[in-house]
Each structure stands twice: as structure tokens, then as C-alpha cells.
Image (cartoon, rainbow, N blue to C red; front, side, top):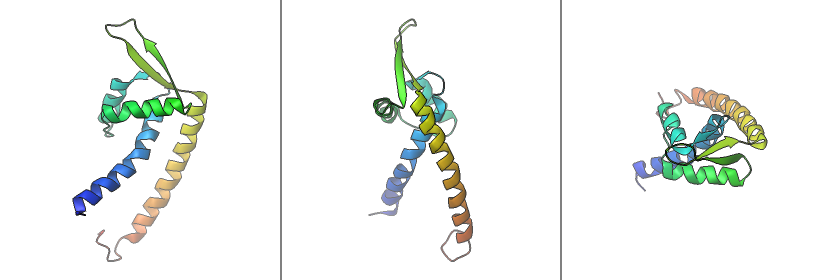
Length: 119
């Protein structure tokens, strides 16, 4: 396996959970899929629509999101928002993210200068 192939696979694994956290974080207020893609991209967390829509459906199936159709505009749009359970899960994930981020940063800072090429 080439370095680039290995790196691409590892980055994809890392991004999966981050995207779930970001999506749940942005859906306190109703949003439709394309607006969410744009908002995440502008924040530096790019996600393709063909990745986002299945994720939204999965989170809805898990009871973390609910959806409703808005048909009053030029074209119908499906809006998603967090459920009460989705809010609780989001808060728990956010707390875990913050704790993990601090721990990982401490480990990475401690690894500097140990001859591992991180300098």
C-alpha cells in the first residue's frame, strides 16, 4: 500500500465521526441538505452531498433528527432538525470531543522531539 493510499483511508476514518458531530451541531435550527453542505464547506469541513444525504437519513432513522418538507418555495425542500434525543446525543458527543481533543493534543505535544519526525 502506498503512503498516499494509506493516508487517504485514515483521513476518511477520522472525518466520519467529525462530520456527524458537525452535522448534529448545525441542526439546532431546521436546514435543508444543500444549505448544510454549503455551511459546512464555508466552515472548512467539506462534505459532498452524496455523503451527507445518506448520513441525514441514517441519523433520522436513529431518532436523532426529524425532517419535514417545505413546499411553499420554487421547489420542495426537505428540512432536518435535531430531535430532543439528538440534542442530548450532540451534547454528549461534544463533551467527549472536547475531552478527547485535550488528551490527544497533550499526547501529540509530548511526542515532539522524540525522534518520530514530528518536529
